[in-house]
Image (cartoon, rainbow, N blue to C red; front, top):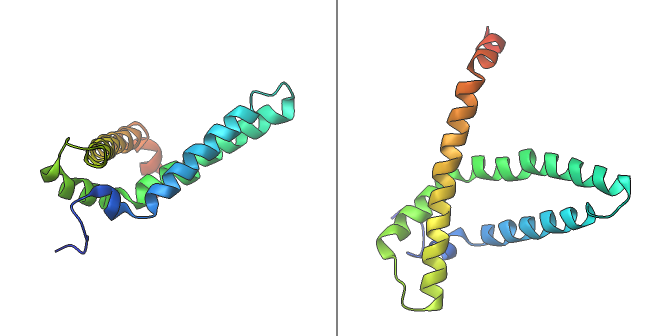
Length: 123
């Protein structure tokens, strides 16, 4: 009814799953480059990790928060553990639910901690 074609959260996520996988591979490669003994490799690693966290990971979670909740909520009634596809989908759904709830608490904690700074900027 919401426009999602399946009970499977992986299928409802579509190409967003590939974006997540490509991002993880990119972070892994940058961290491997950061292990090189030269100073410029460490600078690149720190710069990419800092900007990647705020621009990609935090931005992705902010923009796709409702989609993650909808897809995982639809799939919560269809947990099956009988074959590899259902196991992967059920584990992915649990991961997305944990990530969504953790993200919500992290944002609430951040705003609670920095409330006085935000309040000062508004006045």
